[in-house]
Image (cartoon, rainbow, N blue to C red; front, side, top):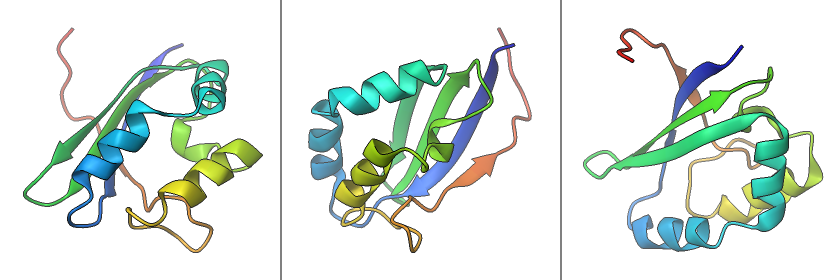
Length: 105
């Protein structure tokens, strides 16, 4: 069963272009991990007024991209991104899952 997952994170002020640059060159190992985990149709949007990043993805397994912290390459990616995002003590992004309240297919 495929489910849609949405969440928000926070980008530090002034790092929009750096965030885009890093994601335009996302590591192939991260792409492989995400796809292998059953995650697809993954998009991230930025609200520039608040610096809130909104992530939306389809998940065919039981794990969203934000729950892959037990994989070494994911930990390295989080370390790499930690200087431009709000993060937890393990450098994972501070993530708040969002409740779907409407969907039209």
